[in-house]
Image 1: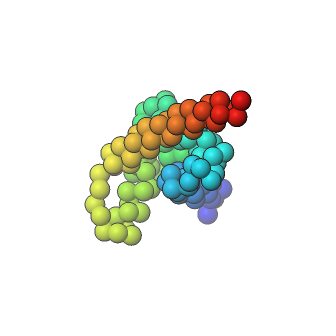
Image 2 (image 1 turned 180 degrees about the vertical axis):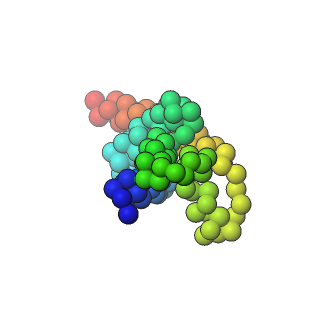
Image 3 (image 1 turned 60 degrees about the vertical axis):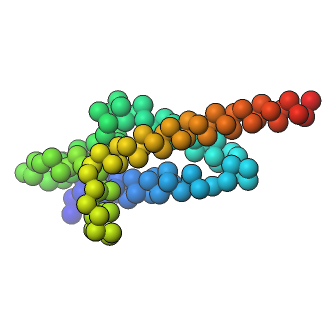
Length: 132
């Protein structure tokens, strides 16, 4: 196995960890872990503009596709630029979902993160007013 293939698998692993953190972060209490939720909301809110820059593709998918093209130069296909989540969900749960579901979930997550960010910032102002 060459270096590009190892890097492509590493990017897939990092991508999976980020997706888990992205989803799990929404279940963390705002009241108990305000700083974590603030950082989570900022990072998730930045996700949509970054994906828009890459044509609604996650930058990690684009990077992984490029590494896969370098690892296997004779194989060129559209499957490189697909998210790993759709085949993973299909394999694990037997659900046949379209690729657009991942994009819609990302957009909804970003909207939720922006709303959470606004809530945290407004509640911080309110707490500061109560202290004075």
